Amino acid sequence: MTDVRCETARELIPDLVGGRLGAAEASRVAAHLETCADCRAEAELVQLLYVARPQVPESVTGRVLAAVRADAPHGRRPWWGLAAAAVAVLALGIGVASRSGRDTETVVPGFVAQGTSTTGAWVSDNGMVAGAPALDGLSDEALQALLEELESNGTGGSA
Amino acid sequence: MKTDASGEAITDAELVRRGREGDEIALGELVDRHQAAAFRVALSLVGDGDLAQDVVQDAFLRAFRGLRGFRGDATFRTWLLTITANTARGALRRQGRRREARLEAAGPVPAEDMDPHESVAVGEAAERARALLQELPEKQRLAVQLRIDEGLSFREIGDIIGSSEGAARVNYFHGIHRLREWME
Image 1 (cartoon, rainbow over the protein chains, first blue to last red):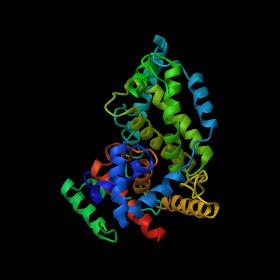
Image 2 (image 1 turned 135 degrees about the horizontal axis):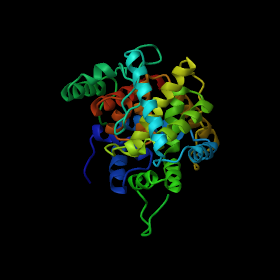
Image 3 (image 1 turned 60 degrees about the vertical axis):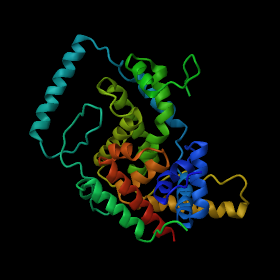
Image 4 (image 1 turned 180 degrees about the horizontal axis):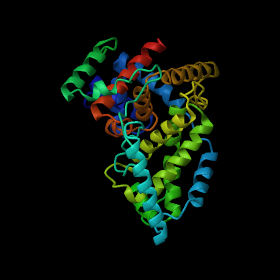
């Protein structure tokens, strides 16, 4: 059986806890946890977070499906519908142009965005930007160094 | 889970293809598969169960209306959760308020073979951990939540929180590190 390093184990702990690993990989990670107190402590925290994850209210399904059915037919629209949509898009474009820089919008991968864009900053609850702009500017090497520094600060390696 | 004639689970990509053609059953299956993740993302951002349900409904409608614009270079799940996060932020902006601390987490599910006293202790610790999660900055909170609750890869998480895969990984481990400190 191949031993699992702390770095690998810590990445896979959420999948182990969520039952998303295959049997062989799960047993390798579990074997590591038996010998590594630090990773075991992390697994216990992840387990606590996982078991207390919010459950979706039963009413959501019905609400969403009813709204989907009530919504306009997807795709096929009459020519006048397309014309009205084009006018609306033009009006929106004029509105956006006149408001440039005042609104926010985040780009959705794989999706044609509807709206405007500015900083996309993710402001944390305490009013500080939540680390992302600084992190996003770092190279892969710098990010790796930051990870290693994190791991060396208070969370040691294998027992 | 919906399966095809050979008993294989139908992929999201196939459901999306059918949904583009107006197949309501396919759209319903997509709702069934992804509503829980969408609800948790919405709840984490808006902090209110009723508003989170509104956000989920709106996000699905926006996603389904935009199916023709969905290029498929992200998974449907990643795409939907990104729309959900944007919709949640929009809802907060419209209401002119910040995320409230009030969260309606479901009660923890104790292991069946645990004795009652131990079960209560674990339940309390789980609730505390979940409450502390809400104190993390938004990117760290979403990175931890999406990795643990939904099993997303760091690449998918990066797409949703608007950062690189490496930054998503760092946000996750920053968040876990802080939570471990706070739980001690």
